[in-house]
Image 1 (cartoon, protein in one colour):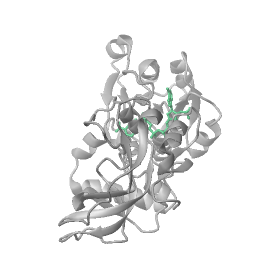
Image 2: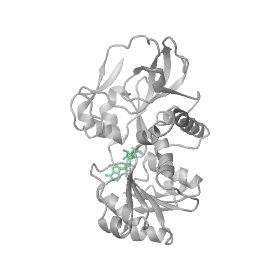
Image 3: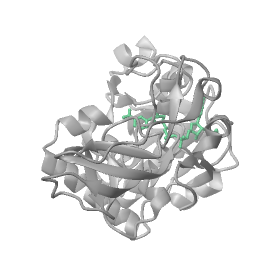
Image 4: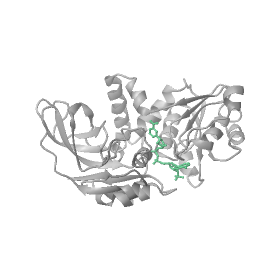
Length: 329
Ligand SMILES: NC(=O)c1ccc[n+]([C@@H]2O[C@H](COP(=O)([O-])OP(=O)(O)OC[C@H]3O[C@@H](n4cnc5c(N)ncnc54)[C@H](OP(=O)(O)O)[C@@H]3O)[C@@H](O)[C@H]2O)c1
């Protein structure tokens, strides 16, 4: 089997390499063996390679927060899935051609689902959905603002906000994707910059912007917080700059803007297993009906993991970079 290893923390394309690893044994009782059809390269995986993610296991380590796979064999007592089923893995270390996991760690998803979209179900769609429900009680007509709005999460937020009748302002660092974001449902698109708050106010027609979603951190976080209305909430959920979140005391103290954080794992941990399964079933159904969708930039073989990692970090590369460890799907 093939597996990606990180043997030192550093720039992802320098430290990641694809190696041949010993084949996995047949599944034991309660275990599931599946072949990995595809995995995406997410910003959190890049942080992991740099040793800047919250999880820093002993080296060598295998990255990979999500994937879609097909069950090859199951051990005694496994009833949740059977050979041939499509599954997503709720555990990590997915940058490999095969995985052997406990049956409770996989979720079956419907046959026939678009496999590229299925590879990205686990993290970004529920993140987008829960950030719109868990932080502020938003009602139809409320305004939100988000930066990195052309990311996969950003696009899903635009789509889900539109469906709920929320008004959204998409902030990006380039303007060539404004047409696409407007077509998805963004009410306004703005380039990030120093006078963002004034431009956002003009875009909402003076209506209060109740929630800001920040994936960039650093000064961009502070700019977004300035665009959030008095007593609104700035939610920091990513650090694409690698910096810490910043906010001016004039916004927290004088205007009562609160800063919240969001992490999908924590949001799911607060829910029952049945609720979590219902969230994923709803998302899979949505994808199957052609609703939720994240653009794909390119698909690489696992042997070209270094090229895939370089591509995933190129500014303005448009769409998620996927890796197909068992060949084209
Ligand atoms: N907290 C959580 O639970 C959670 C869960 C999922 C995702 N996230 C976070 O959500 C964010 C988006 O993830 P994703 O998978 O949707 O991303 P993605 O689809 O891979 O897209 C990355 C985006 O980041 C933008 N970008 C990169 N560096 C930037 C910078 N320095 N300043 C501004 N924009 C920058 C890119 O813009 P260009 O197109 O201009 O290059 C691109 O739109 C990440 O920060 C990720 O860690 C957090």
